Image: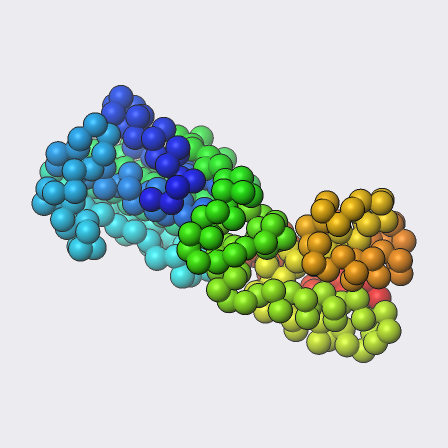
Length: 315
């Protein structure tokens, strides 16, 4: 298990040992923490035929089936679709009505539960209110605001905490990557996001995007090019731009390089700060926050239009 999840696991394990696990949990926390690993461990414990002091035994028939990925009483919804529709939820709920094949209950894991449509969430409510047998539903989410209040009220909640920047840097070093604090901050401290960022060599893409953005004052005709850069992996790249605008505001306020989210681009931040008023930077950053929220998967049919509108207002 990822080291930063161990305290979370101990808390959930103790709850299970005390017989207070209940039938529905919502595991919350920033993306990139590996909350799926925590859910799988909890599912394994719930299904284990011989749990030992709050840990799955790893030896029983249930644990062996779990290891092979063929446990008949476990269902995990795929995480590769933009939304979770009502038919998928109805199918899952119907499966929970059947008897457990190994007699230890059934478990359903729903990653990125905020992807549920309103109809899907409403279809899940009855099962959350009246679970069948010894069933356990594990919902995983990073954006609690996108979940219906009725879903929230029917689940126990556990919030996974971010490790410190130093802990993240040390863990990445153990994986063979020398991460900088800037890279950790850009990825909001989530270790798995930093790992992906490094492995995909995104530093170069970030520098190219933000350099192009600063040069728009000289070549506004390049706005379409900048928009196409933002449209690729929109959430991450809009976040980079938001941090960059914040760094320019901090620069105007006299903050040192060590206080910037992107100290490696301090010269660019200075250039942006010198060429724009504080009011313009702040207004653009606030608009970008709203745009970032609107560009969540499944929210806007064509985010590119909204990105271009934002760039037009900036120019």
